[in-house]
Image 1 (spheres, rainbow, N blue to C red):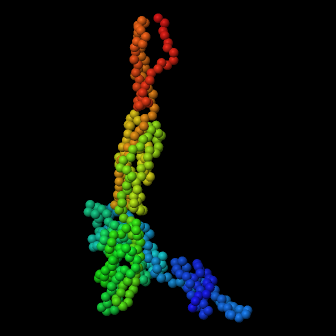
Image 2: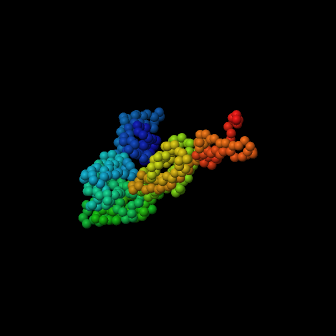
Image 3: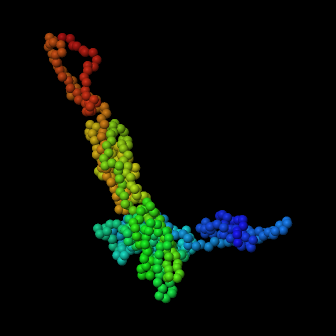
Length: 407
């Protein structure tokens, strides 16, 4: 029957309406995760004049959870390092997903994807701890990238997987399976919804539905897919949902705007002066785009901030000792495997007038005949200045009035 005005009650929002027969209808979407229970007070009123009414006791409506939330991993991506000589069973990484549902709808089970018989890692299906399952050898393989599936126990089941955007076409994503108790039944699987740009395909294999990557992924275009999978015996069908999280692969290296930079600094600048801010950009995201800066060679006069790329002085400079420095600066991302770019910074030290002229001798003495003509050369004095240019050009003058000695 058509619903009347909203029934007042204790809940997060108006969710109920009434009709003349006393039936209580749902008038807006319910969400178990927001409100698990509603308490309503109902009033019955007749059509007389004046109308008479009676208010009942409280009506409690409990909302039942359905499996409408997929597991979601708490990080993207998960990364770790491990020494090659750790013992078998060593815990490497804790992969964790959460599910907003409750009960079996939120109870999760983990599995590794693309893990063949010689794969050196295993995962606890209940805790998500990844452990070393066989001996590691860095000289043979120094890097592993693989997917992890989190699946709840609800109905319809919801699967959650992570897939790196650089996964190759044909990569197995997940196998879903359905059970038909009829004899000689043949189950076919289809992707009914959510397959944006037809990135995925599904085939029936060994009684299950194998989802594979049909086209290359692009993290910048789609980061999530919610696939609706149907399993049908030709007469009846059931559905499951697969939540695919695409993780950003470290496909880009940091890039400096130029392969060579030139800057100037006066030699008298104090220690701690910022010479230049060198920065690189990385088109990836997250840890894959977090850049660390360092100098390839240690030059004691300068240091670089590992996070900002700011080059500062850490010793006094002296143009007269060294007029220029060349620094090789590398920007490295935090992805796996790490990628980097290198640029060269030339620092030219500017001379300032920080040195006074110095005579070659402390005292000079000469002699001259009294009858020599004017402008006769008597003596040559010489001074040098360690500065350069006009700062090092020396001019000579007499200081004070000339003094004469009696004969």
